[in-house]
Each structure stands twice: as C-alpha cells, then as structure tokens.
Length: 207
Image (cartoon, rainbow, N blue to C red; front, top):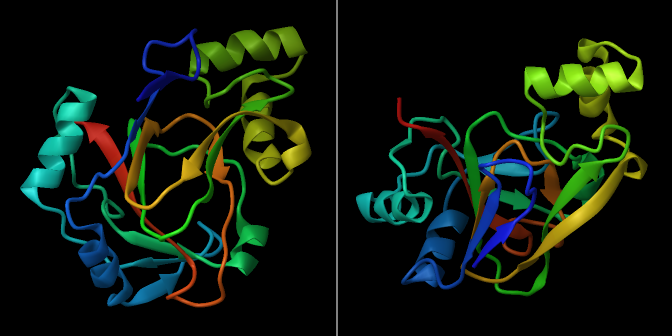
C-alpha cells in the first residue's frame, strides 16, 4: 500500500507492507536476545547494538523504494523497545536521512506511528532552506527562528495536527520520507519481553 502524505512534494509516499519477514517470530526471538542501551535524551526507550541485516532484506527494501541505497547508518537495522513509561520522552520529530522505516515486532495490534502537520507553519515535513525562508517571511520571523521553533515545538503536541496514523501490526513494515514529522502513537509494557518492539531503518540514497 502506498499513501500520499503531502501532494506538494515529489518524494512523499508512505509505503506499508504486511508479512514482511518470512519468519517474524525468529526475528523477534533474536531481537529479544540482544543487549540494549538507554537512548535518552536522543530517542525514547532502548536500542540494541548494530544489527545484521541480510542482502535479501536490503534487496526487498531497495525494490520497494526503486533506487540504490546507502546502508551505512549506525542505527540501520537496530531493534528498539519502548515501554509505557517511555511515552513521556517521546516527541514529534523528523530524521536526517532520505527515508526511514520501521518493522513492528510485537504480537499485538495498537496505534503505530502518527504523522503530523505543524500548525504554525503548515509544514508536514521539515522544510528546505527555500521553503523555510518563504514561510518565515509570511510569518514575519527569520528563517532560523522558524526552523528552531519547529524543532522546539516537537515537545508540545498542542502545536501539531495529526494527518495520518498507521496501525501497529505484527510483522508490518512502514517506510516513509524521513523528513516527515512523526512519532510513535503508543507504547506499552514494563520490560523487554512485554514492551513495544520494533526494528528501525535509516536510509540514504546511494551517492
């Protein structure tokens, strides 16, 4: 499934693929066997060390995005666990790569990932320099001030309007342009085995 989040941009599609892994329970078991480190304040919850991903997985995602990709990001393919209390550390943000992805690996259904529009600026993704400059002139502020405002507003949900939400479903892959504003829609549990488990990807175009 491919969904258009922002018709004003050329790279704006969100891609959802169910039954991504052929043996998702084995992937989940492997993920739960890893050691995790606390990521606060940079991201909520805990993440594993760099996880191996096969040429088959690289090929599948490359085929979905229809372009060659750089797989060298240090967090590419790592597993992340968020428990209920980690929601207080979650915030609306964008990522610095070209594409980002998440595979949901908890065996339950719940709200998955929410995508937002920034109320003040109207942007659904972090603006380019030109976009920020034009909108800042309209708002009678500097480009730097607007970009700083967007980043700081990520901590205050009242500054944002939800535009789309994916459902958390076991073994579902969600790929989206990384500059889109987003955050997890839910988390649960109190330890590794019961928390919200996912695998994350951060992808750049091959140069």
